[in-house]
Image (cartoon, rainbow, N blue to C red):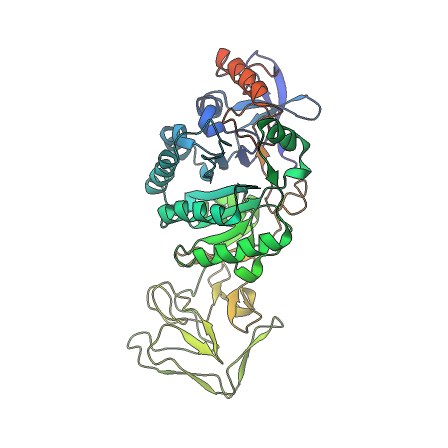
Length: 457
């Protein structure tokens, strides 16, 4: 868990209290702040500068200052109320993205408090139109099976939504409901009369394969949340829901945030870099072959090599992609070949700036896949603007679940406060308790805690 900087702040009652000052805020895994508490949160952020949070385990009150906040991850199933407030973040130079859970359990009445599916899809698309597809992440989460709700039915529902979100997001996050591990969820579903069942590993694998087939028409990045099962054979990765990679894509210009995450933003193929591997005539682009001085492979400094099938040269035939011994390597330049910078100036193969006007080795950002093709290392991402981000630190939050990939953040929500009436919710003891706490919030809607005064019903 992160140890955030502490500072003394003045509370609403005039007292001096110690508050943590997080760089990254999660709002929130514990409740739907955008749907029910957007007014409260933005008042506390913009006017008060802090909020208070009740620890669910010991009921102690702690304070969170927003003085140093640079990025917020929102979580919601109905974030329409958030839209008018998002411009406030730009005023404070705070980045954001939204984890949007967009499920379809209408027939089972498992999410009774939500508006129509069509309305929620429209809200998703509106936010993506206002910002971009990086800012809104689709979650179909959790995936629930029952005697009547089959895997095929779930896949049909996923397809219906996915077809309407194509072009509005880059990622689909999903998880398999593990109901038997949560007594509270099990009890609530039993009371509701819903005959659930847990997934088998074989069913998870079958679902992953079928989802990958559907994804051929969407081209989303498919990822699981907190799952042990390995679906990588179907192109499914394990997610970071609080994601430093996505933060770098959205807010790479924020030096304070990048420094905190220990991310270097460097130029890709810097102009004028001398070629140690091969050059192309960038003015006339007439060279059809790249010569490697008689070598049959390209060594990446101990991380592997690319075999060129014994050839001393590669024939590009004016194509933007090359074939290395039968293994394709995508054209790295955003608009041209592997060997050009974005402005057409010739440069090194996958060379990057060392931050001082020089060029670092190609091996510093490349790895070789099992198939033998070149790829960026796992700790390097292409920002798509002529720059790459290199992550020098593992930012994962060690205090999260075993298979959770989230990085460090401070969650400022509270359990027993969400009134979507989701029957499978792990964050509420009961719907009745959540409704009582929401009424307490309404009596003091801008108080320092979500429930107004730090005490829950």
